[in-house]
Amino acid sequence: MQNVCFHPFRGRGIPDTSYIKSEHFFKEIDRIKEADWVIFPEYWQVNALVYGLEKRIFPSISAYHLGHDKVEMTRALMSIMPEVVPYTEILSNTEINQEYILDTFYFPFVGKEVRNSCGNGVHLIKNKQDFKNYCVQNDVLYVQEYLPIDRDMRIVYVGDEVVCGYWRIGAEGSFKNNVAAGGSISFDPISVKAMNLVHSVAGKLGINHAGFDVAVVDDQYYIFEFNIMFGLQGIHALNINLDQKIYEYLIKQSSPDRPFVHFTGKKIG
Image (cartoon, rainbow, N blue to C red; front, side, top):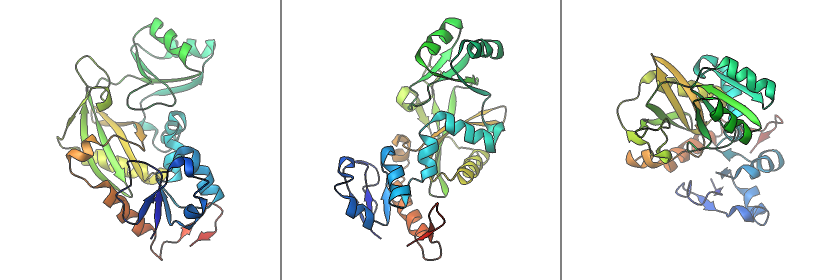
C-alpha cells in the first residue's frame, strides 16, 4: 500500500506514506493517481480527489463536508439525534429573526460563528447589546442555549473506534473549556455512555477522524460539535500513536473483501 499525505505535521508517521506539499497538487497529479490513499488533504482538494480522481481519502468525505461548516454539522446531528443537540436556532440575519431570537431565548445564550474552531467565534451573549454586536458581525444567526457547565469531554474517534477521552476544564472566569482558550485537561474517567454516543453518531454520519465535544447536564449528554483537525495535547499526554491507529484502519479498509465503492456505484481497485 502506497499513500500520499498533504498535511505537514499529521499523518507523516503512517507507514508507506510520502508527503506532498499542497501547492504541488497538480504538479504531482500522477503520484496522486497512483496512491492507494490520500491522507489529510486540504479542504479545497477534497472534491477534486473524490469526484474527479475517484480517490480514497482519509478522513472521510463526510468528515470534511460536515466538519467544514457548523450549520451543516448541526443540522446533520439534529436529523439523527435531536435530543443530543442543545436547543439551537439557525436563521438568516434579519430584523424579524433577531426579534424572534430575543423573544425565544433567555439570557445568557450562546452565539456562534459558522466557520471557526478552538473556541474562537463562540460568544456568551448576556444582554441585548451583546446580541446586537454579534448580529453586526454575522450573516447567519447560529444561536444555542447556554448549558451551566464548567467542563466538557473531548472524545476522540479514529477509524471505527473511540481511541480516548478526557475532560477539558474551563479557566476561572471563562465559559469556554477549549485548551486553546486557556482550559486545562483532566484524565478523570469518561462514562461509557458518552463514548457509546460518539461511536453511534460517528457511525451514522460516516465520520472516521474527529474530536467530539460532549457535555453532560443532569445525566443528559449533548454534542456541541466535532473537529476533524482536533488538538493533540491530550493525545500526546496519553502516549497514543494516532498514526498507527490510522494505518491499522486503512489496512482494514483496503482488504480484498472490502472493495472501495465510489459514489457512482463503481468499484475502485
